[in-house]
Image (cartoon, rainbow, N blue to C red; front, side):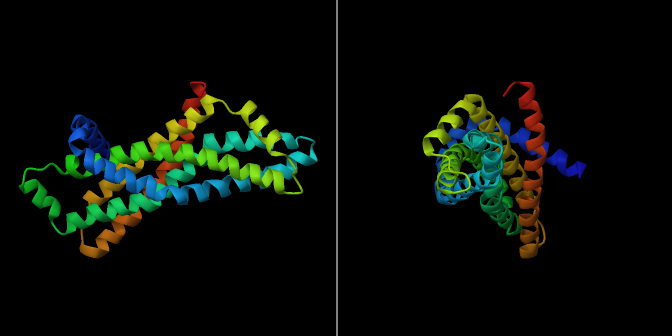
Length: 248
């Protein structure tokens, strides 16, 4: 465990040191951004809309019973942008993109393509890790911002159409605007950036450490996704505590 943690930190530091070379890899970065962001957009919107809808469905009737039904917009708005959107988008990307990263790099490791890169004096971290980490760190916050909007919309649809809630769009978005400010949105974006960084490093590390043929690739993919999700949830708590201390 501690050895893996040390290797992750070293890989992260090597990636940071390679950042000045990112412009040389801009074509690969743009390709990865397209795959992570645009290709995941419909799935992200669908997931976020139903997350917002479920949150409104769960909280709305309880608030209405206590005469606080108009507050459902504020609760959904803040809950989505501070917590649910960054966490759910990170888990989605870890499952969809993180697994692909680990599988692709793992296949290259098993079939000695990474050794071939080293023979040609091409640094695998510069060529494989850097573009993926930069791309996921840019794409996930953008997806989170889109998820905020679609999550709020999903909550509004349920709040206005469900007979047990009956909160109009006007009241819903009025209270959402009163409760949610730029700090809430920034807090979610900060979380999503660190979730993206952790997911990219973990999945690339698992890919680079793959051994044992096709079965080894399968193990690396499984470990990459599971470790990423566990790390996302741990970081979520730690970042929440830290952001509260900084009034974010």
